[in-house]
Image (cartoon, rainbow, N blue to C red; front, side, top):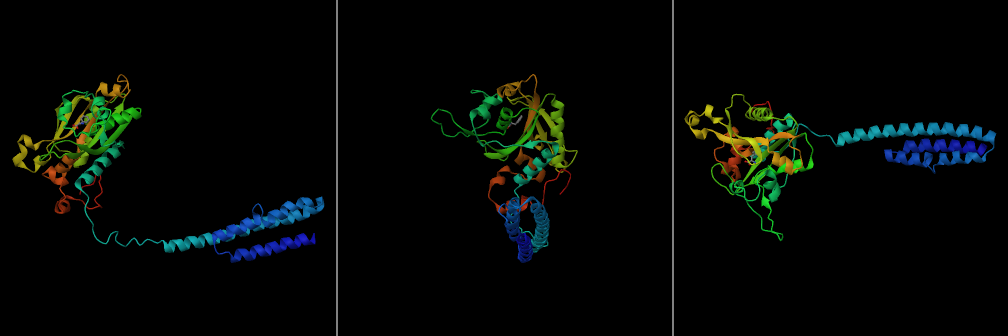
Length: 360
Ligand code: PHE
């Protein structure tokens, strides 16, 4: 019995000294395991109590349990002291000097296409659209057939497609000619309600003042059970006004044709008109920026959706053209000439973040 008391006292002294000497949270943890762990010293003492007589067990047990509580308390106290010290030390070491400039000098500029894409995404993000992406290399089904452009349809010729070499089974992949195949990929996977936009590169064999073989589009798709032309017109008008950051921009909805939409329209804007009297009265002052329409029932059925139940609209816009209009860039081809002076002039500083309300 005496022996047991002696052992407990010894253990307490040992623990106190060892804790005082422990200089890290992990050292304290090691002491906790050595004392209170499964094979810890105090745990072993507590286990051995069963060998004692009932009266002894009660007495010794009480003493051992008091020591256990004390040990837990001592360990916890030392641990929090050391934790605080370690945190203080790391705050000093990891301190960030926010007064230092992020970069010693201004390196490069953001390309107008990146800037414009960011702005478009910010506006649609604010309207509640989710962004998705599809592959640049597409198959014939997604780029044409599922969009109600079956083999032999004259619209295929209008697309000036880049085809990849023929494969063993006779099929050929192609570089997507528009972002509309992403509509199909989303409709195949998701159930309405759908509100998505899909930014990306598209490719056509075309090159002049207003065409390059590669350019960017942003596709939009909204499907639900009551979506109508009014929603389409409102949504696109809201976008245009937000993008150009003014309400009196001239917009023209012109009837058009796309095989994958009905009530198809093209939207032209004449933004330069206000500042440029000369071009004001000529037809050249309008630039087509968006194609849109109500999603054709054939598109819905080819993706397994019931056109009696679901309806909606789609649109596709040319990113470079929006950039040209907003930032007064005259020739589309210069976007892809590696001319640093051009980028210096038309590019943006990285702090020029897109905003819906902000003017720059
Ligand atoms: N994909 C069409 C184009 O590239 C644009 C469009 C998209 C039209 C969606 C209507 C609906 O010209």
